[in-house]
Length: 133
Image (cartoon, rainbow, N blue to C red; front, side, top):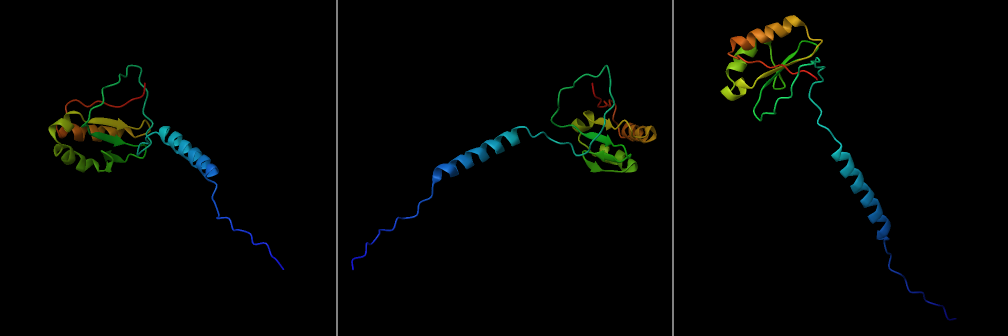
């Protein structure tokens, strides 16, 4: 008997569909990273102001933050009111000159006054506050 011997084909991977999938993934990642916005560390509801002006962004600035639960932060680090004066005195003169206060509108007025008092004792003369237009 004579049997027909078939030649085995080498297995092949169809690359066209893989290229399509990789292209779609590439487009997805490019689009999703383009629309990503920086999220602040703390969500703060700033009060509104009709006379607010946009100040130019400075490279070296310090921000004192008071959130709605009256927690105080200096450049994102939690700090107490009594430690705030010493920490601000230790700042460089350029950072101390550009220091700003960012307080939530639900923060208690007493805490904001204590913070402003500590900053004044630390030698901060001009204290701008962040508001929304």
